[in-house]
Amino acid sequence: MEPWISLAEKNGCRSVCEGHYLGAENASDNMDEETFTAINRAVVKAST
Image (cartoon, rainbow, N blue to C red; front, side, top):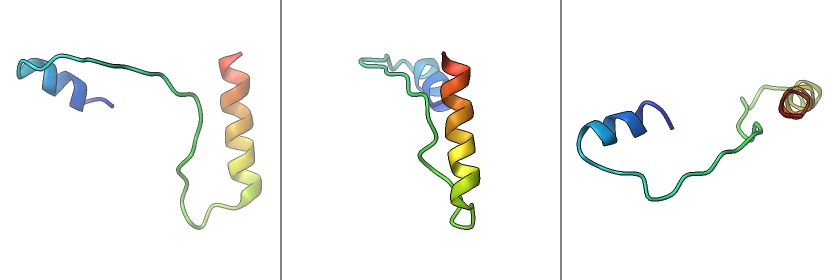
């Protein structure tokens, strides 16, 4: 989660675990299901 990782490293902290996630699990309450589905479809397509 940038910029927090960079800030922590500048302050002498080190990363002990890291993971990568491709997806969109957060959306505005007023986003319709069709749009949210299209976003997820685009993320999957971009990652393959």
